[in-house]
Length: 310
Ligand SMILES: CC(=O)CC(=O)SCCNC(=O)CCNC(=O)[C@H](O)C(C)(C)COP(=O)(O)OP(=O)(O)OC[C@H]1O[C@@H](n2cnc3c(N)ncnc32)[C@H](O)[C@@H]1OP(=O)(O)O
Ligand SMILES: NC(=O)C1=CN([C@@H]2O[C@H](COP(=O)(O)OP(=O)(O)OC[C@H]3O[C@@H](n4cnc5c(N)ncnc54)[C@H](O)[C@@H]3O)[C@@H](O)[C@H]2O)C=CC1
Figure 1: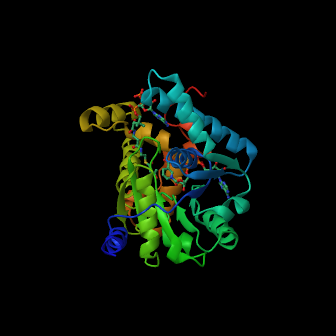
Figure 2 (figure 1 turned 120 degrees about the vertical axis):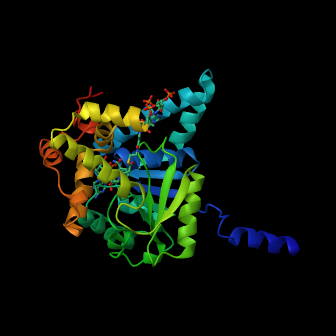
Figure 3 (figure 1 turned 135 degrees about the vertical axis):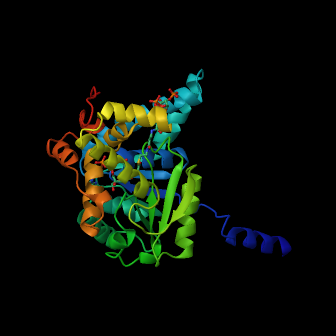
């Protein structure tokens, strides 16, 4: 009796939570979705990664395999058997699909990582709300859109939250877990426990634009572009300065190319619409021109810098 009480108390404290999420659907197999799916599969979850076409999911599978190769070489440097076992185990947990409505039927959690556009995200969640079982939790990986604006299209706001990962997902240790006023304590605790089960350090933030990291990081990156627009310094010198003078692993232009210039433009345009008087959110002509020219950074082979496409 005393033991049962102890167990119940242990699992009902706010600090200790059992990860009840076993099956996950990740929607959007781009930069972020493929990383999230990979890490969830590597930590024992059954994952379905969904995108619009077979061609896109095939490309994602190739990039996941490359990332796993890099990880196993580091994790098991001289043990080919262990390398193969790790890769096989991760890939066995991962299923690729183009059929989102079937995938969500057997999911404990759905994580959306599609394009940073409110209307597109709302349209998707409207469909998912009808297709997924009542118990299924919904989360968005949005960089900048208020979670409440996405969640309001569903009838399960109590089961909705934000799970904001960082690029590259297999390496970055942080996860921002966001709740809206309607998110239940149970949902919040399950999302947080899932994040911890993925090996991430979680932080909590209110549903404020950009949460913690992007509210600071995006204005910093756009200020770097403005510095170049004024002719004060070159991208290369700004990057060198921030790496050697401030200890950042990448300079702001390297990071802009890494994140994707389209994603950065979506973020800044969205904030500028909401708060047009804020000078930090003013659109940038150089950024707009690069996106118009489809120079989106690393993913298209050119942004502020040129890359060898593999
Ligand atoms: C926009 C948003 O909403 C939010 C965001 O995500 S903002 C962006 C947040 N991300 C950042 O700020 C990233 C900043 N950059 C970094 O932290 C580092 O440059 C980095 C971790 C990306 C790479 O590290 P690095 O030392 O500069 O480069 P690199 O030598 O290529 O990589 C280090 C190791 O990681 C491995 N690695 C890099 N990318 C990898 C990936 N995707 N998968 C697996 N392994 C990877 C490499 O193989 C390498 O392994 P070894 O040490 O065995 O050689
Ligand atoms: N790039 C980054 O560093 C980060 C991005 N994010 C956010 O994650 C989300 C995804 O960003 P990225 O992965 O960078 O974008 P991406 O452009 O690499 O990938 C987006 C994927 O979503 C797919 N997609 C679009 N609409 C879809 C739909 N209706 N159904 C299924 N798939 C659909 C696209 O085909 C594409 O493969 C965005 O909300 C972004 O703001 C969050 C953290 C970091």
